Image 1: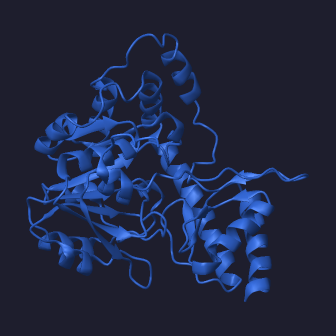
Image 2: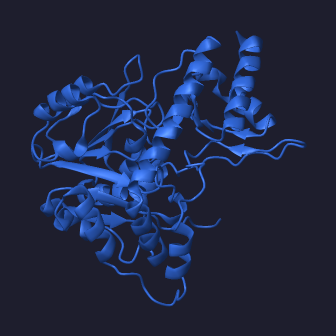
Length: 359
């Protein structure tokens, strides 16, 4: 009998990240991938040219310090450069944060359902999960999350807007929560979808940093900037935390084309913001259309909509696939990314037909 390979015991309880499914080809109609929260709009003018120019000599390493992009982002956010650190997408930064805080015998507190990578990074480091369910209206239950913090807690993960349910954390509840968190525990505010947020009460992570030195903001160029395929994420934090994160982020992980594309996109940030609001408007129209059919859909502030279908999630996913639409089945519900108008119309048609069969 073949011996098992010698790997870490933690792997036996670590879930692998499962990416969103591609759509099935259906004769006679265009298929749409609405399973990965990608930005469906075409690249910003100037971005493809910047990528091409930076990729002319792939034999050279990228700038490991991401110097030019760091300087531009520092000026844009009015944040000192020593408070910024780039990574290959927000996912690498989340992994780095786990690496500097988690190990066997310590605990991580996070909401659920939320970003699927949270349980993965916790399990891989052997940490104990404190997985806290959302409220009845699909929001972070911050009071219960605060109650779950113990002397063994080393990391708290928050997601605003929450992926996949869409709710944004509001300033009063955030401040109440942070007042209960010991100052030596790192709290991560994952703001991957912040540009799509239209909740006037949503916490401003950048403003909150001044009062909470244990807060780390994790942001990305993947979503609103439309650079998901290039992997550009970053953290904003106290310089001492950034110093530790530098030990955990892989060198040269942000490629030269990725850095060039992010610089060009940052130079066009007003256009990015306009496009994000256009996507948010389409999102709100989809929510209104679903509610008009009788669906109980929570407000969303990301570039996606959450349908809490529970046991019917798989059936709805299959109905979408049969109609050339790929959505994200997360078992408790289905997340639908915002796409072109034609794809949104088809989702409404699928939802109406599905509701007539199962309600």
